Image (cartoon, rainbow, N blue to C red; front, side, top):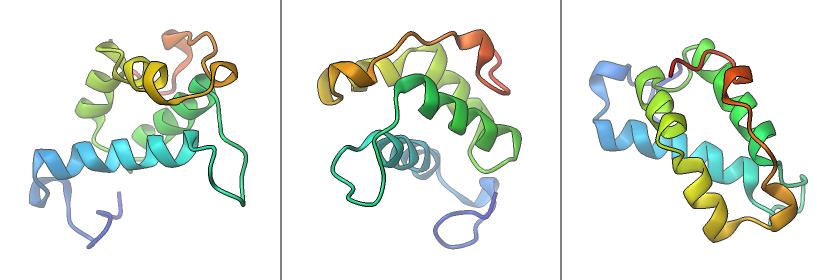
Length: 98
């Protein structure tokens, strides 16, 4: 993608930095404390992240691990409101490769 935050390519970014990019976007999408937007559900957030993967804005391999290992669900169980934790059909996530 654009190499958030400094215009770096995937190869120029460390794995932890690429992981943090996915985590930061996921947290922003699901956060309920942002006055300018409503918090998204798990399925909405993963759909958006999947489109970002397809558009090369996030690390594709790390995103697949994020979904396959259900890291999104572990986070949700700890930090999201119950109404945000909806059923996720992983086969409908754009670009997801199990």
